[in-house]
Image 1 (spheres, rainbow, N blue to C red):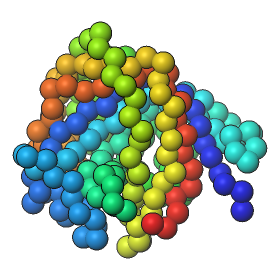
Image 2 (cartoon, rainbow, N blue to C red):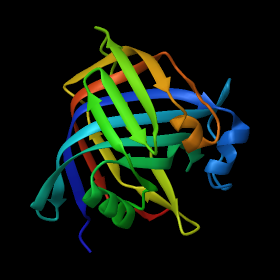
Image 3 (cartoon, rainbow, N blue to C red):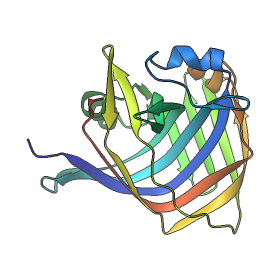
Length: 213
């Protein structure tokens, strides 16, 4: 079967990091995956982006192009001898994308309102919200290759094909987070968010169908 690839442009992306206690992180991740632990606990990541024009590009470029907002909650793990991410929750504001994400990518999708701008991201779900403010600086870090991304579905572990082309605009930003309880509801405990993060503009995003790990 030809490999299926979806691609689109992350118009705005805000990427923040943090940590959560290992006691809170352990139930979120399959026991077969060791946690990637920092000095203050297990590694945590939140990736928020405004996608433009996601659609099928391989084996053929056809079908609709979709615009939506996404917030991907991730816990750092070790897999195949390298650091990786495990997807805990994927908040999406587009019904069709949620269905495709659940069926093809096997994401743990949730319905939410997600707004991402160049210096701000907001997630609203179930009467709770999390808002990220990014004070963008001039420092341009080198691009880093994406880590492997893992999900669990039906008791099985899957990997998601995921590639990113370095954004033409990327900067380090000072981060402030306002949280009415959405993090605790998602993770089971309140995290510690780092005060520095990354913003990207115009990054090309490529992903595909999940396969058994």
